[in-house]
Image (cartoon, rainbow, N blue to C red; front, side):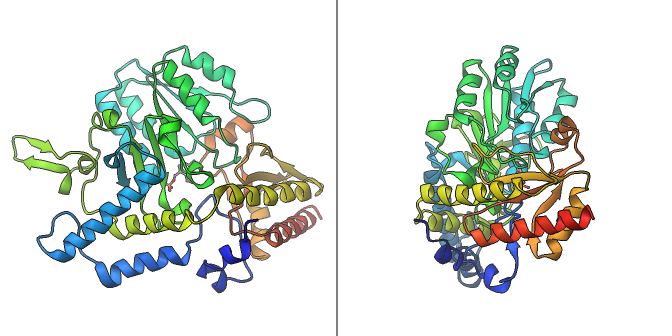
Length: 403
Ligand SMILES: Cc1ncc(COP(=O)(O)O)c(C=O)c1O
């Protein structure tokens, strides 16, 4: 059995906010003491810039930084450590990909395939460059139960897109995509595969060898780590073809006003001073997380999810958009005829933190013909008490708004 009490005790946040029910986990997770301590230890004891110092302190900071890269590469089962590129988050990773591939691999008239439920971070970067480079975007629609339409996906793959990019888990609905199957189908159609793992990396340890995608991006802050740090994983052959989005710092080999030559991977794609403490904090999060059995965490989260579904279904006037099966622990819902922000406001008054709105997925809400939804997102540190308090607050919201 997963011991949620001892897990939760490791988060100072909950000591400071004993009365709050934090269910905004898809936006960002709370940080365990192991992470906050690793970050402050770095600043208090080890702070120096990396890769460029002649002194021992810088060499020690560099060793910690590169050890963190190894930890992360090992965690995601990358074939080579240099395939882990540090970014400021999933958004930065996707922007680097769109920019980098558009300059080299994608040509006018090429097609790329996205899906209807993508986060804006997996739409806008492509769009910015597609317009300029004459690349066409196709979109995989959804089925009636708001799952990706895999038949339509296969039909769109027949148009031979050069690249397919989709999220591992929907940040609005919580639905887990059949990512391995989707990657295999895309590869069989000859496409480069990009997986937005911003939510996926939290649900399960992503295995790059098994998944076999060409790129996978995620943010540290959704995986118990600090904000402002993330990972762009890519297979060496593809990383080498990316034009760097940013220039300067360690990414160069030589610079003159006539020509600049670039450093090797991973440094070629890491311009400027990196978020050193963030990287060390992310590795601390992963090291800490690995002491737990993720199967038990998944079971615990599905217990919470099922209890929530059961309770919410009994509240008259609540319409649930998410499906309970293949769900990572995220529920989007609405109160009939009411604005999601009004519902979230009442939950906030009851000290239940959720998010309301379009969750950076406007095309999904256009498709659903809705102006938004309330999102309840569970994490391993949530309890059945949290579920019950949220349900009570939801009942109150319905009562107040429909009175
Ligand atoms: C599916 C998905 N992709 C991308 C992002 C962007 O992540 P970040 O804002 O950390 O860069 C998010 C954040 O919510 C997300 O849920």
